[in-house]
Image (cartoon, rainbow, N blue to C red; front, side, top):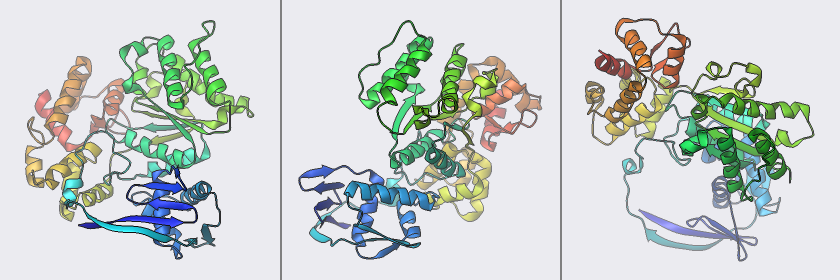
Length: 452
């Protein structure tokens, strides 16, 4: 396949498409990926009016976004170019890039041929922002709206491996497009020492925030509580100096729930929400906290007035429905035909990881749907590694395992606590403890075989 090295010039700017770089004279202008993509589209269609819908499809091919997202992106590009006349607004229709564009270079070079299947990444972990395998769900748009409103909290709840971190990554990218500063704390990256007490956890959080903002190490007043110190650091060092909007993302918050001091930490977070009302002229309205979690918070926080999990925007991230599974099948090149998608949905139940793993195996020619169904619950089958981890995790709590065994083998009722814990772990689904069910048929068959 032959590609061209494209380099353009307009006004005082020079754009190298292949190097993803923009210069104004000798100064390189840093552009976020979405702004760079928009500028390339404009340059390649110079002088032509581009419909809003066309631009939205080009910039967000896998998401349902509103005109406001495009407006924000257009205005951000205008601000970077420091000239409002470059991009003309065509009322109620779209936009036109008006300056003269000169082609500086188009030298051909050869790129090795890659089959579409070679570009499909193996499943596992959060999907990169550029991944074509990400399937948008209604929660994506709701998350972005909450960020745009500057809500105090955006709470993303969902079972294990449902895609919370992938959704969070896209929500944070939307925040960056709105010129917010994003701070990320992933509690999976903290060692055991950080969880000994609030005296170790909260300073660790402050140090990580300072590191991301390139601030000096936080100073801690030993006469104050850890919570007061963290609050003082945020107010004095993070929020005080300008009108910047911040999004603080807390991923894998479930690691906090089982500690005796967890309520103290969550009460601190809730107090920052309250400060918005108590001090409306203060800086707290410029801080949004986004939290991902699977645990039923009400089982661990007895005083709801001290909980951050009942304020702000609360989102529930569910497994794929059959329509979304069909869309994912299309992203893999449609290895399943229409009448097979329902069978596949029955097998994996819309579980995002299992769906990606199954389609990956079929797409790579390692299996057919019939073979996948036949070997699905085998320890050495296509889902073997995942199922073995599930079995090992259940062995860590014999009491919980025995309750699950009674339910799976004889339909015995589950305690409320056991149901919620198993649902959070992604083993069961259901709206209440009175109506539990295995998350998918694959789990039902596997658990019956291994719990017997």
